[in-house]
Image (cartoon, rainbow, N blue to C red):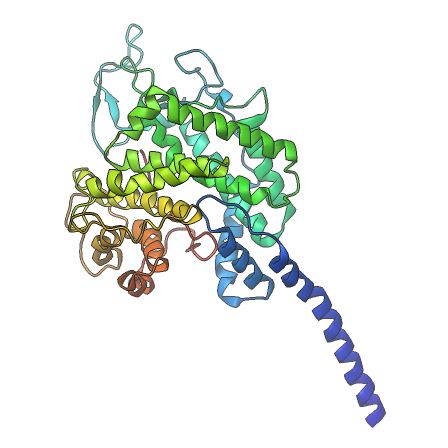
Length: 423
């Protein structure tokens, strides 16, 4: 009996050793791999999170399930292409991106002589439903969201289908000759019978395109179905797009904006500069944002006056801080601590986030105009401030409202606009 027990014990030890040999190299390999060179996300933090997953950290399971569910939802959608719209942009090139100003409405019923119902008038905060038909806006948002979810899901789970789908979406929209988009936004947020395109249309990309930049960096970490040619093609597209942003009249106008448009423009330029190797431009852009953005756009009490003037002041206050916190994340890569900066009147990102905390935690009502208050809209920017060392934000985190689709901060610690967005 004793001999048989020893044999059984020996078999169990051998089996345990074999299991460890399967699991531990996975964790060791995750530790040895280089961190992805993401522009907004912290690649080293992503690498550490993946290592925790390889070791079976139970705290991450729910977030991985939520992320995988989102990625699964994209597998049977798309790919989308800029050439699919029913009418080309005003210049006539179907490869040019086209979107329509969201808050502008026709004043008369369309007729044969006036098919658009012109002239158009502005109704701030009220989205005209026709902007979601006949243009590229909805499709490009799906490109941004899907590639980010899919690339992250592949990075954490290793499931090939996620990387393959992300590559298909990116190639169709940006790289394939028959379907690719030209690297400009000359016809973004046009107004029928008024403007063929506007500088403020750049926000169609600046609000979310940095997620694509990071998705490409993640796929560059050995993703199946994403070749060296694909990486080079996206690099060239990003260089051309960055050149357009910096040198075009529209780009210069958007860069001069003194509200969220200017903040997002800086964030997009800094991310693209870092991703394409121009760290000098990335660093200058973040450094300049201290006086150019924080000093002029954030008041001494932490409010954002330009955003409070909107009919959706909560939405736009959180929206602007998404840009700031992502810009601060880029600054980390180029040696600039934007969180530590204080303006001449004490303006700071911490103070701006602090103004949101009572409403973000449900402790008090938001005291400014807001057509559609969504408490969870502030969740990511509060997480960002907490991670940056703010004690009040850290104390607020347990009281935040979970966004639809789950709280993914542990897997992608960079702020997103979590409520509806119309630019």
